[in-house]
Image (cartoon, rainbow, N blue to C red; front, top):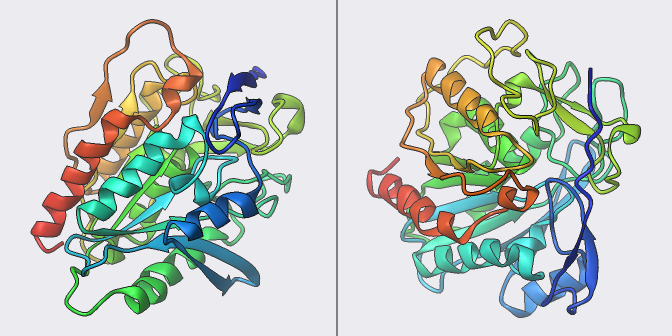
Length: 329
């Protein structure tokens, strides 16, 4: 039986939201502001917008590179459900760790490409619109985001890369952006150097149910459930199962399987730690090389705010990518 759980919280956000109280729903927990205002703030800071047409849709991204060549390559970053690309360069208090991640990456010689999900284009198995989310679920219909991401990796990044730069390409993402990060590793692994999901689980073993009666969220609708246990991923032990009979088929490797490193808070109140561990097991069983995950030990009760991108993640995540860049992919 599915349990409807609402994580709509009233939080005070300063910075991009002017210090007023805003509603920060569910997995995104992002500061809410006009897309255009945030984009303009990013552009004023030297970020550039790129428009891409793919799969019949107009898509965009924001990017910025170091003043010199890309010593350590490029990082693709994916926001969480209900978020936006601009939250890696502008926004209120809740997204400051993500913004600092991008700043630190630029300072260390990485270019940063912030991807943007569609709104109400992604649908669940029943055809219901899912709000603003990356299309991580494995369904019978064509995936909306894999062609977009492949085009960025194969066309956009090379076109922006200065001569003599490191050609490495890395991927990281938060929440459903983290689920999509793992999906990219599975589907486009031969085109990337390494990946690092943040606060995420197994995309091949998770269903999105975009029934608006199951959650009060409007920016990213419905709930996520584990395919084996049929439990919501917020529940303790939601993804703990000895069987994987309902797991979607992982793609056959086209080439090398890129290494990965996961980042998670043991007290994450949105994606239970069991879901991260399931993803670890599935990745290893499909030939991916695991690096020791970075897990923040549980202190106190589970909390939706412990699902957010943390400052603690920034240095070890960039260290992991830099180490892979130094190996030449």
